[in-house]
Image (cartoon, rainbow, N blue to C red; front, side, top):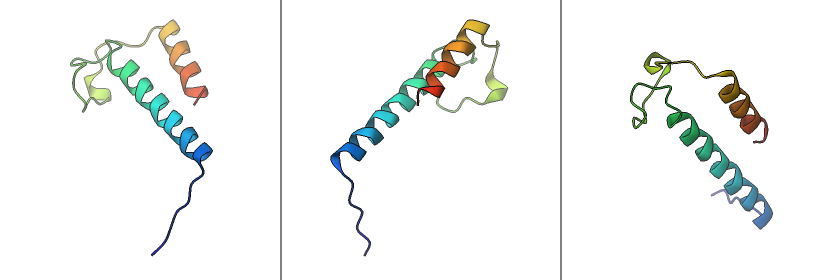
Length: 66
């Protein structure tokens, strides 16, 4: 049986990254680019409008901060 030992700092970093990823997913879902923003199963086929330049810049900035 393998054991994995994670320090509290590693745990906090992991939790912070998972939280940031969840926030990014929610931002994309609620951005209004999908036909059904409430769906968790949206794909590129469900996109009804492109991101504006400002929205794209904000998303890229958020991704780079991950």
